[in-house]
Image (cartoon, rainbow, N blue to C red; front, side, top):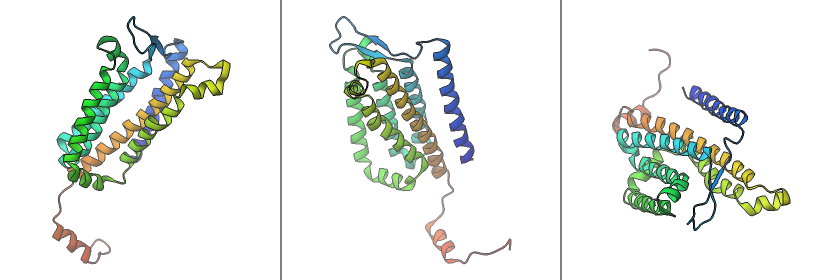
Length: 232
C-alpha cells in the first residue's frame, strides 16, 4: 500500500508540473509574477503570481488533514494542532498580497503573530502529551518529509530569493522576474513535500489511533513465550 502511494505521489507531481508547463507554453506569461503598487503603498511594489494562488490550496488541504487527525486521533491532537496552525500561518503569509491590497498594510503579520502566540501557549501547556505523541511517531516518513519541506521553505528558498545574490551572479543581465520565478517554483516543491508528509503523517496517526489496544501484561507475556514454527 505504501509503495502504491509513493508511486501516486510521483505521477501526481509530474502531472501537475506538466500541466503548468503546458499552461505557460499555450499562454505565454500565464505564470509570470504580476507587480502591483497602490497609491498609498508604503512598501513599494509588491508581486503575486498564479503559483502563489496554488500554494494556499495545497496548504488548505494540509490543514483539513490535520483537522481530521485532531478530531479522530486524540493521542496525536497536540501535533495536529501545531502543524495545522503552521499551515494556517503559511496560508496567511502566501495571501499577504491580498491582505495588503484589500485590508491593510502588514495586517497579515498581526494575524500570524496571534496564531504563533496561541500555538506556543498551547504546545507549552500540552508539552507532556506532545512529547508522548512525538515519540510514538519519530522517526517516520511523514515527519521526515515535513522536515525536508520546512528546510526548503525556511532555509533554501531564503537563499534563492536573496536579490543581491542574483544581481551579483547575473550582473547587467539581472531580471527580477527570473529570480521570482525560480523562487516560487522551488517554494512550490517545498509545499509538495509538505503535502506528501502531511498525507503520510495522517496515515500513521490513523494507524496509531485505530490500533487495537493490548494490555501491558499481554505484551510482556508474548515476549516471554517462545515463537512457534509452522501452522500448529
